[in-house]
Image 1: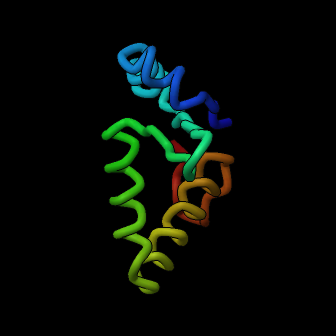
Image 2: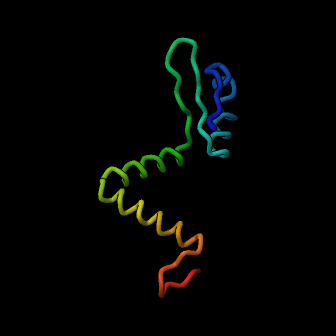
Image 3: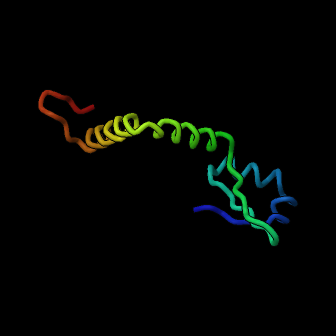
Length: 87
């Protein structure tokens, strides 16, 4: 769940706020009295989101990735095809 703080609190505690975002891996919604809110997110999380969006941009690649995820999940829960071993 995303935390929410005011612009004033974010400004007063910017360093600590940034540390929390990085360590907790949870974005923070920063609200303003006059203006739209924004989200503070770690660079690592941002890059992960960008890579995921890039990989899912191609419908064919998205289908392959989803199939691979389903395959991994089925193996994790112990369903293997005939001739396959569970690890």
